[in-house]
Structures are given as structure tokens and as C-alpha cells.
Length: 124
Image (cartoon, rainbow, N blue to C red; front, side, top):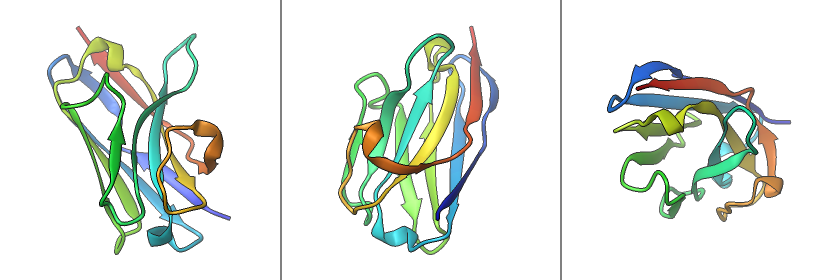
């Protein structure tokens, strides 16, 4: 069993920044890929970014490329999402997810465990 707890969400003005954290417990964090997804009201959950077990490989959704940065600290069992130049369309609940194998994927269904989500609201 894996527990994922997100934090760092909040309300920010357009152009501002937030840093999300996802703390993991329950299994060997460093062996698994991690991802961030988001879901806006009335929309389906969408892929944001993923990172391989080592942090050496990342993949970003086109909508966040150049603005968001994912990183991980395996010693702290934590993955981070630095979000800069935020836009109102970034408003959503952000979820981190843990995948059972080291390679990253953009497919939500391939992630085994999910956090409870943290709300990010960007005002115009």
C-alpha cells in the first residue's frame, strides 16, 4: 500500500507561482515513476507531467511545457511540481500518482496509487 499526500495548492493571481509537493510513504519510493494530473470542474482528468524513478526522464503536457517543472527527492520520498507563469486555465485539482514500475507514462490508468488532490485556483 502507498500513501500519497499533496500540499502547496492555493489561490494565486495570473502570472504567479506555486510549488506543489507530494509526500509518499508505504513502499520504496525511489523505484517508481511518479506523475501529476489535474482535473478542472466539468472536465476529465488530464496528464500534466511525469518523472522516471531516477528523475532522469520527464515528460510534460504541451500546455505546461516551459512553465512547470517536476523534480523529485528520493531521500525525502517527495516529488515536487514548480508552477510558474500560472494562467486561469491552470485552475484545477492537482493529483500526484505513483506507478508500479520505474518507467514514466502519460496514461492515468497505469498509475496504481493516487493522492487526495490539492486545489489550485488562478485568478485573472
